[in-house]
Image 1 (cartoon, rainbow, N blue to C red):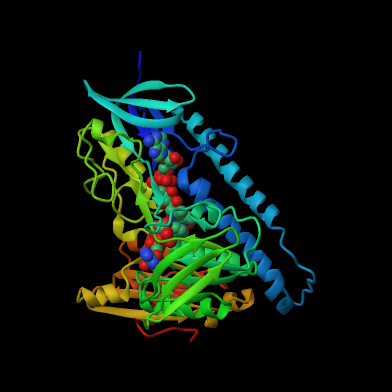
Image 2: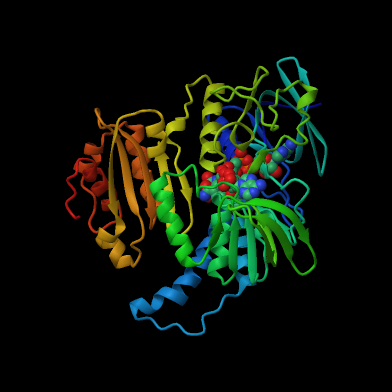
Length: 475
Ligand code: FAD
Ligand code: NAI
């Protein structure tokens, strides 16, 4: 006899487990199926984000930043720290502990919310009266029937054609988070989010890091002024970023990897490194879902085709997160999971795609929400811009971290904030105020008139808002 549920969620990453919890909160009986295993073969809930994405990368970024501070910046504060060294194995073990705490936390949350968890691969069997039959293939086989199905199967790293990941020499984000010894020379293909975050970790620990980027512009999706400022800072730190390259043959041996590439001038080059991380984007994951059994429509990339409200091509089937269109971000996946659960319950779940923040956790951090200056120009929208540098902010000076700026873009007529772009210290936290402001359709004058604590980095946001009307007080 199959187990019956109102909702079956396939995938236990941020889209899946959050959607499952919300559905349970709304009174539905919910199952969540996830196949992730840790090194001991046990369930490890949280998906890419928790296991090989957001959480472990931020743990390594934090450890490596402390190391860099101790080595390079403590002296400015009068602190003598000699013989500072990094025990990479300990750093990686700490990262694994942080991951495990999150895995366990999610397992606890599912239990607390009475979500039934099944460890194994979930796949469609057939449509049945009033729902779908789903097989769980894992430690024990189970057959479940759900009235509504939420597909939240995430994404996988994209490999270069003809160069599969071996996770020893040619690494995806998975292997990149498990490097056990600081590589003398590290190569990365792709200067996107992973390239910059992982490149920063290993540069701080002493690797000679070279990033080969196919596009002629650095961080093309980021506001140009902010991207330029970030590029300057990264190059000054010692990251080598080659733009407009064409990657050719890659040969991996036991001792290293050799990458043939052509630079922007068309000159043939070779990059010899100890390890190579390939971070050229991710592809939606529908492997093993058996979508064809029920005729679930996928696009040419393998993504589940959904409408604006995450409805897939079949009645009662929804999909959220990396496996559908839109930015591949944990918080976007979560918002979609919540909205779908609410829609299933007959409520009006909503995700505002205009106010999804982006953060790159390098140093300086880069964060933004809304439109860039180049997008506004391309759309022919009349706008005003205000910028304020952290070098004029008292808190940033006290921190000893004055790189970067806050830039605010507002409609020329209505003054509504259209975008905020930050490069600098704690940009990841500062952006939250700007997201709230945009959700409430605030004007730049609103931010300029709100009292911000002194001394705080958030005063730079207020000053950028004042700068929109050319009336900064501290510059
Ligand atoms: P996933 O997290 O990928 O979860 C999908 C889950 O479904 C997995 O556990 C998988 O095993 C399971 N699954 C797949 N198929 C089946 C099946 N048939 N049956 C059962 N289970 C199945 N985003 C941010 O917002 N901030 C960050 O700082 C950030 N850092 C990142 C760093 C790295 C290195 C990487 C790779 C990604 C990062 N991301 C970050 C992106 C973020 O991880 C993803 O956007 C997010 O995990 C997507 O959530 P999801 O629920 O859609 O999918
Ligand atoms: P990305 O899309 O951010 O960057 C990929 C880069 O590789 C691009 O600049 C692209 O031009 C380049 N590229 C593509 N093909 C190439 C080729 N053949 N040769 C050279 N360069 C090439 O993808 P990335 O870094 O792999 O990250 C995947 C996704 O994971 C991100 O888009 C993001 O959604 C998510 N992520 C989010 C993080 C965050 O929010 N802080 C951190 C890390 C990942």
